[in-house]
Picture (spheres, rainbow, N blue to C red):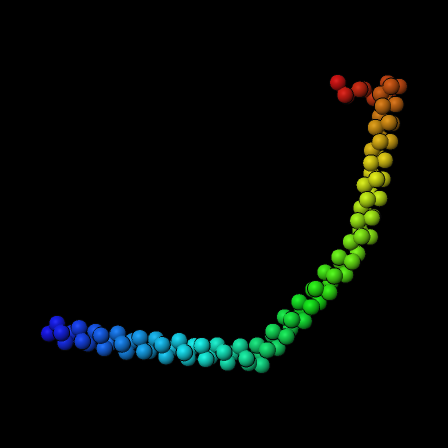
Length: 104
């Protein structure tokens, strides 16, 4: 009885393995057909076009960076100048007794 049961299990396992293999082959075939389908092809073309647009936009932004860098440099210089002026005005106001000296 045990030999018969073992034989049936082996046959069942073999049949199951065969069915799994067939299912995997079918899934691969369906996936390949789907990937080659018209909607998928159009979706891939749209993604490619979007990537090109983004690359072109990034290129334009990077090309503008020197102007932005120059503007940032001028802004930083102006800010530093204004801070120096404010410090000088505060020192004068402290010297004249208009505001208390908070440096101590």
